Amino acid sequence: MNNDNNIFSIQNEAEFLKICFETFLYQAENCKPYCEWIKLLNINIKDIKKIEEIPFLPIELFKSKRVYCSDKNEEIIFSSSSTTGIGQSFHYVENVELYEKSFTSAFGFFYGNPDKYSILGLLPSYLERSGSSLICMVDSLIRQSGGKHSGFFLHNHAKLYDTLCALKAEKTPTILIGVTYALLDFVEKYSIDFSDLTVMETGGMKGRREEISRNKLHEIICRSFGVQHIHSEYGMTELLSQAYSSGEGKFFCPSWMKILIRDIYNPFKILHKNQSGGINVIDLANRNSCSFIATQDLGKINNDSSFEILGRLTASDIRGCNLLVQ
Image 1 (tube, helix red, strand yellow):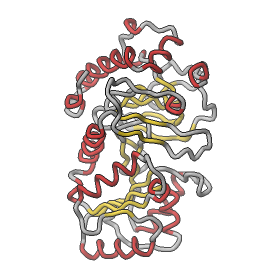
Image 2 (image 1 turned 45 degrees about the vertical axis):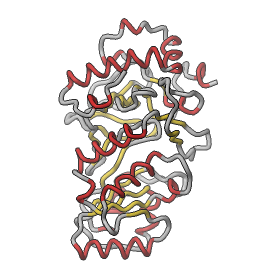
Image 3 (image 1 turned 120 degrees about the horizontal axis):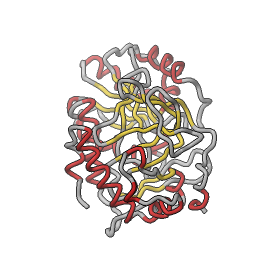
Image 4 (image 1 turned 60 degrees about the horizontal axis):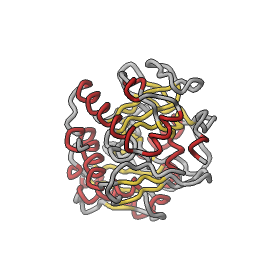
């Protein structure tokens, strides 16, 4: 199966569905954990006719199974940070170039070419470990930006502040990508009125700080940077694609990624817009792992086809998932 180039040129729903079902049939036969999951559900893949009928693999299985379906060795293994203390997820990636094309294409769709910006990374918890797909992405975007001020800032908040001041004075378009708790650490000591700055939060508190509401968080960060909105990136170890929000917590997907919302009481029932439930992700860039993932995030899809993250599901296991997790 080779649809690497096709997925990034998807223009409409018909093209998405065609590649989606090709991907499903390929992975249902070649991804062993997905095959086992479908068998446990007693599903005949030939009976699947609608996107809502496709079974989604519980994301927990990335912690215990090799979710992979290529006959080639993987080029890289991405791993989660395991802040919950219940084990790491591992994503076996056959082709790093495919991941780079996915995140570069998505970034370009929402923000334009990286070389238009200085890109700053405030991602200490990710930099302090190996295997982070987020660091791989941001490092590449920094290199593509080519800006003399672009780079990572570990815990050197003073240097970051000086850099922001210089970029403001130079009127350089700038994106600051920061893990949530690190952005809060920074604004406790520094503030700058940089209204043209794009602040993008990702990654949450990572157990470093007490959780607060998104509205309160964004209010604090907006006030400290002098910006109107906080942008956000929605991605995870188990995905090779990202959705982005330019404010108000409303995320949009690139054309090769789709969100469905499942009923939390009946995980095989897909809900309509404006109904809250568990987030299912279709990521066609996950060609050689699994493109159909049932996350443990809670969310809803809006009338404009954006989606929102409303929190985490309290019940972390889908009924029957433990048969494969063991």
